[in-house]
Image (tube, rainbow, N blue to C red):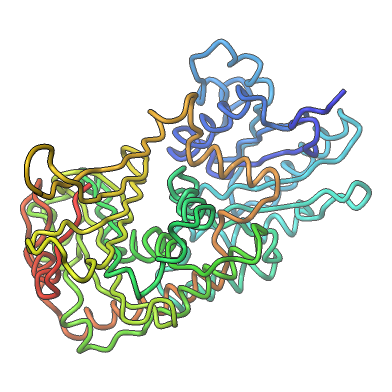
Length: 479
């Protein structure tokens, strides 16, 4: 009889640090539950919550309970070990509990650790794991220990390097999973598939045929009472350094040798490394920052804050494929619509045989949120006499084209973490190279104090962002 997927996976114990927080309750436990429903978890699988609150196993289960028929079967996999990140004895108790849990099955298990905490806790937790012996894998069955980390990965290049140095003193790179949930979205997967699996696209994927590329991540919501956090980060550090840079790397990478983890990550890293470092003169013409009206009245926000809640930038990838092709990145809050999209804008054909000066540009759009799908804008003839051009959209909407339920980003990424697949996780050098560019932008802002334009909530952002495009005779694409 053929073994099921879960029978092929090694026994696994997943410890969630910060298990009583919003991330654990709102994202991780529900995603793991859906994997359980789909029968994708290992047959021997346990979740151990670790946080300061004093809960019994049953009390913790009630805290994270999901209303469903399958809940009782899933709840049997959930346990709780109360503790403080700085208390060695609590980690010794955790180690003893895991050993006891594994001895019941007469085997050792992969030990996976999810740091669902502030990054400032990472060094403390890593040290405590090492001191308690929890980082030692099982040599008999070649079980592994792995750790997954949430962003932000540092606040600038020096802090990112310091964090990496700390982590690398406890873990090897193949044990570290830096999670960016954008990479788990279905459309991001299709950035590679559509391009490399269809011969009509790859020959056009270069400076000879592409005019420019836009990457947008816009939100209707504000900062959700996270004033203290946002005052330290701003839109550039919060979204541009990670999400937008990773989307840029995916869309601009060279064809990998194969679909192996290192082949894909190597090509992503090459793109980010090739981003041209901007001068002050470059950024004066290529950067727009804004702040939504009312931001300064948010809790924990300085009344004269210059923190940007919107940022748009034009940058270039300095390699043979993309030389001279501008990439426009933008992100912001309290805007007219919520959407995340990568749009490829092709050059106009020449000569214009229709001689109408009304040729409609071809745009290939990958809409990541909210309506996941791929859209191609082309010109067609209006029905009737004569020739009048009319824009037509060829659409591949996932929910209309494919049947069934699509996995959420955290489902996909958690399953990859459990299986030991790092392809959708960010490597250390990718983080470092992206910070090099972002640091130059932040230094420019600090030194020159450019205008932070106040924009109206419900608009498309500051006028300076529109002018950035108009100067290049372009306009922002609206999903």
